[in-house]
Length: 168
Image 1: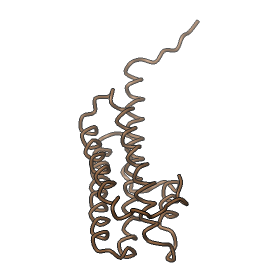
Image 2 (image 1 turned 90 degrees about the vertical axis):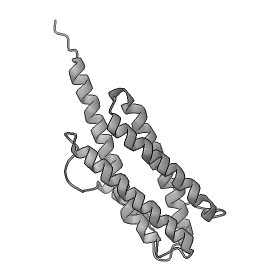
Image 3 (image 1 turned 180 degrees about the vertical axis):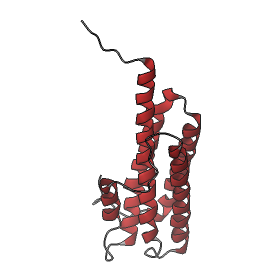
Image 4 (image 1 turned 45 degrees about the vertical axis):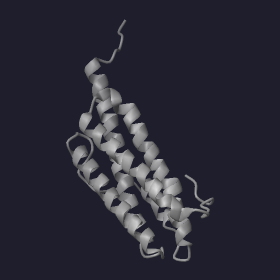
C-alpha cells in the first residue's frame, strides 16, 4: 500500500510559489492603478487634490517597481509587464467616462480600490509570514504604511462625495 506524503521541501516550495503568485498579482494591481489613476489628474479641479493624486501615483510607481524587482529574484514571477485582462477591466471601468464626475471617480479609487489593495497587502503578509521572506515583508510593510497614509490624506477632499455605484 503506497502512501503519498509531501516532503517538507516540496511544501516549502509550494508556499514560495504561492508567495510569488501573490507578488505578481500585487505588481499587476499597482501597475494598473498607476496607469489609470493618472487620468484623474487633469479631471479634478483643486490643485491640492491634483498634487495628492500625483504624489500617490508616484509612490504607486515605486511600489510596482520594487515588487517587480523583488519578483524577478523569484522563479515563476515572469519578466513581462503584462497585466491580466480581469485586472485591467476593473481599472478601465474605474476611470469611467469623460462625463463622469471626477470627484466620484476619485472617491471610487480611494474608497474601493485602495482599500482592496491595502487588504491584499495585509493578506500577503498574513499568508507568507511563515516563509521568513524578510525583503518582501519589509517592502510590503512600507507599502501598507503608504496606503494607509494615502487614505488619510485624501479623506478631507472626498467628504460628502458618494461612491455608492462602486463595488468590487
